[in-house]
Image (cartoon, rainbow, N blue to C red):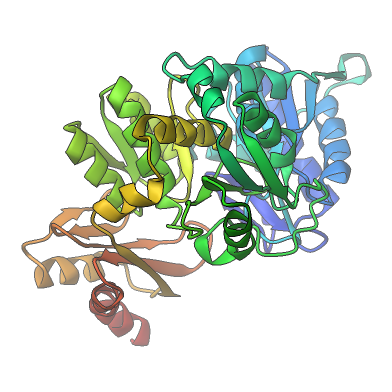
Length: 456
């Protein structure tokens, strides 16, 4: 089946509400997922949502669609995406559905599909599930319809699991009474982040805590969107500021100097914290800053790249037995908790690092090499990209090349990554170097063969 305007990827299916994403589309995909997930005979499916205005409506639709294929719905209400993933594991469910468009603008919503292991569906699993849209979704008869049960303890369990991490010094953090500024951007972070910080003895100064989904700024927690939080850190003389995206799987920082260093530092700091207690491999996707691989090199542990996409990072982490991993967008994954990005976890790790360092994190940043990331995109050419990749590898024979997800070329202090978007007809070009000028030079050099093919 063809659904015009939808973005379908390893993360799920998303679109603008009332345009591509209609009640009929949501019902169809939810029913297909329920039928796919319950083929093993396990018919329990966890459902949760973020704070978006369309969330309650789509929740009711998802409930009915899942019941129509015989599923028992375990509804956890408004909750972070990592809470939904943990609930799937807790209930030994057949899968989970997160009703969230993550960091997308206010007019979007989406379904995120979670498998029985608590991981998002792989590309192969997603294709298998979507095949039901063409072959037909088996519906339950009147006597085999599903039911709905409520689990209102999922957030509490999530908090307890974070606080129970064996090397998290809860008493030590409480004794420090860190001053923390918090911006949940009217998202689901409001149901978990204040409670976590209170449990850790922090003095919390919070803004945008109304979980009504009415984002007053772009909800993606990138540095340019965090001006309010920077001002709050400055006004309250906070030790650190935390910003979450609407579904609370990404955490961005504002440091004690009231500046946002960029989301990649969340994973870099988290890795520094965890590796002191559990040395082991680190995994990130190919578009992540060198500040993370620098930490792995400094700590003397293996470092591994994975394809872009949370599930790809998680599967690679499982394959290599990684201690920690994630994505440079502020997503921290700790296998000791679960194989999914988790902002509350990230916040706890930041406080643990501050406790262990005994000094402002801005000083730690100042001591290390700094880099600048520049991102670009252009129309995807009709010709295969292999020719573009060959041209670039020939132009830079001394660069280390990684071809598992497009092409990444690496030098000692810089890199460039080209990859076709999985959701748009474009090619993304990302470069990082010690200066903005150096990064933009890499972008221009990488674009040359692409521009040639696009113009043909």
